Amino acid sequence: MSNLVLVTGATSGIGKATALWAAERGHDLVLIGGDVEQLETIAGAAEETGARTRALALDLAQRDSIATVGSAVEELEATSGPLTGLVNHAGSMLDGGAFGAPPDESDAAHRNQMELLFHAPRQLAEAFVPWIIEQGRGAVVNIVSAAGFRAFPGVAALTAAKHALLGWTRAAALELASTPVAVSAVCPDYVSTPALKRRVEAFAQASGRDAEVLLADLQARNPAGEFVYAKQVAAIVLDLLTTPRNGTLTVLDGGHLRELNDLR
Image (cartoon, rainbow, N blue to C red; front, side, top):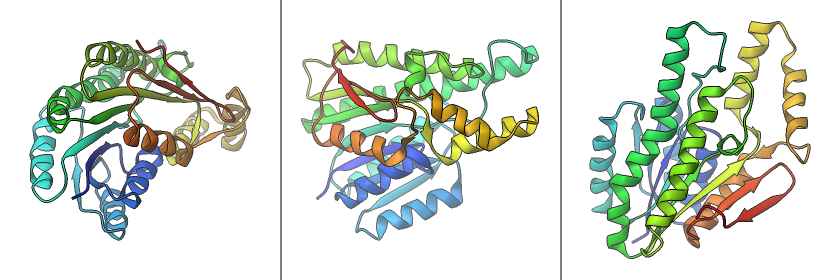
């Protein structure tokens, strides 16, 4: 039997690329995302490679969703191999800057991002790390992004949540150092994904600016002057699942890759 990998945010971008690449490498998958149609399409593509899948359209910002995930993992483990990998990638379009929005909107954005980008990965890890330990090996890979250690204007809610996730990942790596589970973080700069383009297009429409100019500006902000691509990030994630390295922080800036061992 193959190993089982759980991927959140699997409907597009990094999550989609990771899921399809994992399927090609013989992993069975539990896929979580918000877009039912997209999720079913990706699950179908994974199954064409021979992978068994279970697709769950869930809002991970709702805390009772974790129990649903657990039931799906148990069900698929009965026919697949053991759960050995957790990839946390779920994201949200709901965001905002530190100031300017009405208090209710700002509060909703910050709470949503903390629930989805920090509490959901934390809860999933707390739920499944004991399972992975029982298997004798495995990995948790958190897609933190460069917003985990740098600030970006206009996305204060996301930046705060990603900082929290990186801090939690550091602590988890310390606590799991003597176990067979490795916890690591992958931190790409701006990634060329449909989600990024939707964000830019929404901002362009609201501000009256040109979307192509805004995209070019974001690309130029990456230290290497190029976008990071989802497949590049997925390759790192699959490597960390195949050869787990506890306490590793991998930074991709659009031209260079740096693997740091400073999480601990």
